[in-house]
Image (tube, rainbow, N blue to C red; front, top):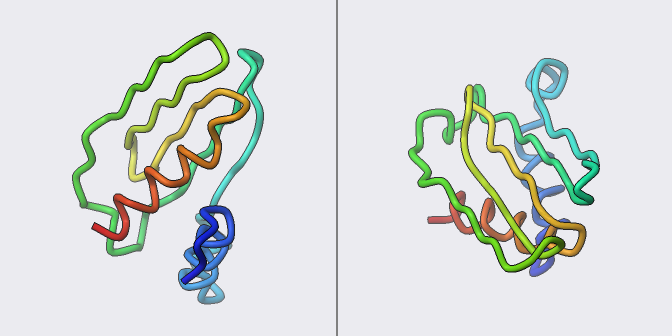
Length: 97
């Protein structure tokens, strides 16, 4: 397993890509105008689809914030422009716990 959260996410995606899952599900990464990042990681048809998660809201400043939650079998991330690694780390820690 990679020490880097982005590489780890790529490995997680590859473990779930089975010729079918990635055609209906997957990961979306985009930006928002706060500014910041928006990530959606589909959990459907994975062992995580029913795992509970307590919403995380970290607010340090206008550009230093992270929100993570689950909605409709999707791990949702919204975070500041420099918080993507932190947010992916929250997902990773949850998956590995």
